[in-house]
Length: 122
Image 1 (cartoon, rainbow, N blue to C red):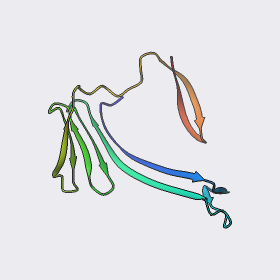
Image 2: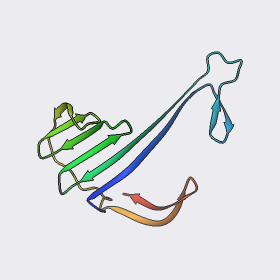
Image 3: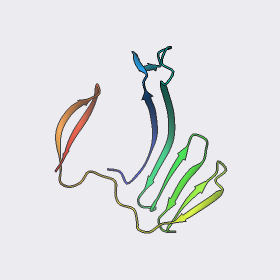
Image 4: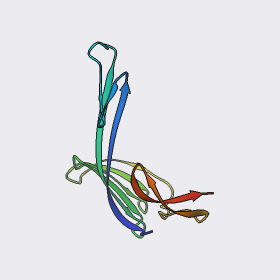
């Protein structure tokens, strides 16, 4: 695995409290169900991982970010201009991103209709 990478991460969440699945991913409350509640959320971030530089960052859709500089032993909250808003002390360093040495590649698989490589962790 590369030890320097970036990724766009999206997350869609639905909390269904009495709604009915109407197909195509739609969840709706029946007109007669006054206690029904459906909540949805969406989040998008750009994630950076830099093991040689000993740093990570997560940049959110509004431009704010959390930047971790392990050499400085600090995690920073920054605004959309990159100005520090607060920081927390941290201890410890980064670890390489990868598959554990005791994992077995069991071959091609399909997950939720998407082709994938299946790994088994012992």
